[in-house]
Length: 167
Image (cartoon, rainbow, N blue to C red):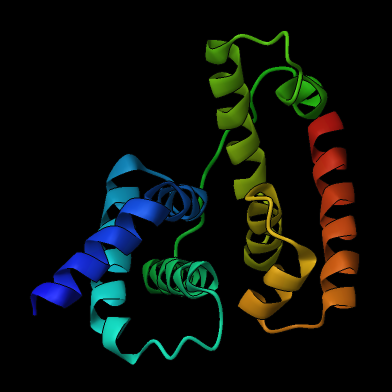
């Protein structure tokens, strides 16, 4: 049993930030984010012994986090009410600007999450995985669609997001 606990702690330690970001994308409140995070951890624990290694551990963790988050959203059956941040058209190009201080980057990240939360569930999933710097191959493996389909869908999501931020 100790071996399972050590493996679990290692996996969670290595993937904590990824899991947390996914939870933030799918939950409107801090409390909901914490609830999803705990549920993801429970699902990882339950599934740990059945992981067959057919995919990368990070892909497996993403699948659990995303499926748990989608399940939460489905169970709650509520629409996320969000307010657009000020000057959203500046968001994407400023987000990666090296001159932007850490506080401003955090604010821009928050605004980006707001914009992402306005997308449909599948679009939110695609863009959140892209922002995690996953390759289109990894995203295709996680979602279960072809790599060319991922590229097309991400392109369309970027267009939608750009229009949302401009308008």
